[in-house]
Structures are given as C-alpha cells and as structure tokens.
Image (cartoon, rainbow, N blue to C red; front, side, top):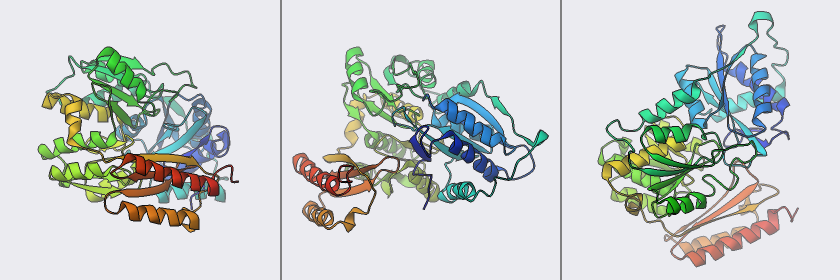
Length: 453
C-alpha cells in the first residue's frame, strides 16, 4: 500500500502533512535519486499552478533535487500538460507539477512525469516512497561541483503556445468564432487566451486574474454556469471552462447548454472514425462514462473500452492497447497523437476543429450522443472501509442493482484524492435513481460519515 501517493500524485492541505516543505524536499531528493541514471548532468523540470503555497513547495522541491546533484529547470505557472510537453521536448530526465488540480487554493499536490511526458507507474512511486521512509539516501550528500543548480526557462509559455497551435489543422482557423474562456484563475490564465486569439478567435475571458487564493473559486470547469451565462450574454459560439491546472475542460454550446466530457469524446471519436484516424476504431473511457457514449460509438462503427476511474488508467490502457483517444466524463481527454496526458486547451481545439470542418454549431454536433439519465452524489467519510462489508449497505445496493437490471447501472467508489465516497446511478427515470442514490448516501453517512465518528 502506498503511504503518500494517491491516484494523481501526493495531495493534501498545504503546510500540513504530507504537503509540507519537509516532505517536498524529501520527495525532491528521492525523485532525483530515482531519475539519476548515470554520471552525466541530469535535469528535472518543475512547474506549478497559481496557488499561494506553490512558492514554498517549489523552493523545497528545488532544494531537495539540487541537494542530490541534479539540476532544476523552473517554468513557473504552466498547465500540467504544458509541463509534460516541456519535459519531453527539452529531453529532461523528469518533470514535476505542483498543483491540486480542481481542489480549492488551500490544497496542493506534487506529481511526477517521466522524461517521455507520461505519469509514473505505481512501482516507481512506491520506490520513491521506500527511499523516503527507509532513509536510505539520507547520507548521500554531493558536494562542491557535484551539487545541482536551478535555472528559469523564460520562454516555456511561448514554446507551449506554439505546440498547442500546431495541433490545430493548418487548413483551418478560428476567424469569426466568438469564444468565452474561463481559465479558473489557474495555470492557463496566460497561455489559453493567447492560443485562441492567435488562431483568429474573438475571446471573452474570465478567471484570468489569479491572486494565489482564487483558483477554482466559483469559476472553471467545476462551475460551468459561469460560461453558460456569458455565452448567452455575448452570443458566443462556445464556452470553454478549464480547471486549475488546465488538464480538463468542460464546454457549453451556443445556447449555454453544458457539453460534458462524454459528449466531447463522442464528437471527436466519431469524427476520427469518419476520417479513419481512430486507432483500432476504439475509444477508451472509464466506468463513470455514460452508457449513451457506448451506444453512440457503436452506431458509428467503433468500440468503447472501459477502465478504472483516473486519467492515468485511461492512458495506461491506451498505451497497452495501441489506442489514440481516451478520457473521462469529467473532462480529462487524452489525444495521444498530440500529447501524453489530459490537456484541456488541446481538447477544446480538437472540438473546435470538428465544428469548423463540419460547419455546424456545437448543439448540432452534440446530438450524436443521447445520455441516459444519471445521478452522481458524494458524501464525506471519516474512513474508506469496504462498504460491501457493511450488511445494511450491501443489502440495499443488491436490491437496487436487481431493480435496475440491464436498463441501468450502479457504481460506488471512493475518491482517490479526497475523503469522499461517490455514488453514481444510471437508469431510465431520473426521480427514481435520485431517490436510490440518496438512500445509499444516507446509509453511508450513518456508518462512515464524519458525524458517525
């Protein structure tokens, strides 16, 4: 069992274990040791989002890495996928992202990329943990010229902008397209507006004034109502909402109606099928994706492969099976022909490319998929016990699954990054499945909720 790493790196309240400067320094030392493979000079890229705590964690990580004789390349605020890209394009040995993604500003996190831009597998994360807790490298102290140094990459933002624009078809542009763009006061606040403007779009921005504490605060992909209202107000063609580290995107059509990750994947996958560009005619999604996605792709002549929740598991399946498109309903989408991880801005560009190529508004394209009624509820828990070992819950879950039959499904899982249990039910009647979901949430709250403890 991993002690530090969750489904997306190490995460928690900044300045509280494990997200302390002491642990950040230890993570830096251990990671530097793992990625240092020979006697040549090694380099690790460090980037972050706009959280106030990013400064202290960045300095601690940098100190830990340099103390092991590895050089640091600092890129400052940049989207998570931008750091993956810079790491790979600069042939660095690894990349580090300081971000808690969609969480509020008091949280922060640390996640690592390999030199190829892909996230670390479990075994490497466990190796880093083992080095920290065993204190095996405490005595390793390079001195004199063997100590690492830190330098800032001033043109990282420009490099990433050029890369993003290169993923948009050269024969197309965004002239005449009006875009509402919400950057969540996060890592993409400078990059994303420039990308869309340089491709010709008229861009109305929101969430581009970070102050260290307003990241994801009533803005971004968790609050799509912001772009919906602005799209209607400005009569825009599309609303685009990124999250704090800009690895996910949620959009709305020209009427302000939300279009989630499942619909975006359906539109892009069907377009790629039409162009014979969808590898093995297969889309990779998670068990949280709506059954309507499977139906839409099947009608288009393709197949959907399902994985556990988490973009890392989607990417692992894509690499294992040789697939090039995958993602999550939450808005993480991976276009492996272009980048190695979820990229909200890149995903929005691919969607806009389909709109331009087809000459259709987003509302028309989104009709390619009809979602089954779905409800998703969360409850805070004091412990993450196997709920199927609790008789009252197991009994009611079995009854509901029997009532759903093959006309729906029930999925219960713990969040990998927060003390939450999620209950998702799909079925034919929204009122009925909402009632069932609330029943389960209530039972879990009684047994495992914070008040029960």
